[in-house]
Image 1 (spheres, helix red, strand yellow):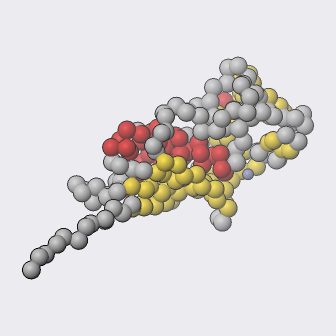
Image 2 (tube, protein in one colour):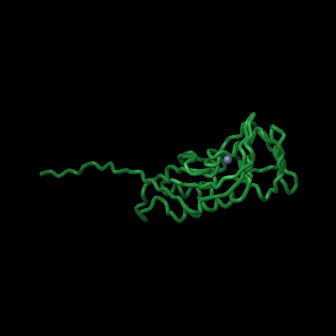
Length: 201
Ligand SMILES: [Zn+2]
């Protein structure tokens, strides 16, 4: 009797989801685009992470929860208790005025905020969607894209909730990701940004 091996096509992708009490930041912002500006207000943001990849035969993990938590907590801390300044805005005039950042909106509204109270972000609008993309980039760069690729991680998703049941998600494959790339391209070179304003990461 011939015994034949059944071809094995066992090639699953695992998904790991991490949420934590400490994946949060409290911050102020306003969304501004052509012809519209929200009033300054704040949210208690929460962040979630999903990691997609194969199981490591060595340790049985996709990725160590502890490493994921440490990285995302660090990113949240850079945003906590800050004004989320969208440095690539095409409708805000954003200037470095010594110890303060000054913002002037289309409607003439003027804000002067200590630089240390701001998170200067390379985004166009401080929406949950763009924040999720920005946090994705910060997380990948803090973790190290080479480490993730070596583990075979294929994609990562970041969720940002402004409030319960109000959440944006950004999922992206790691293939083709180039460190240093802007999460959200500027609409026009230097639009809205003073010459000395540098987005942080
Ligand atoms: Zn808001």
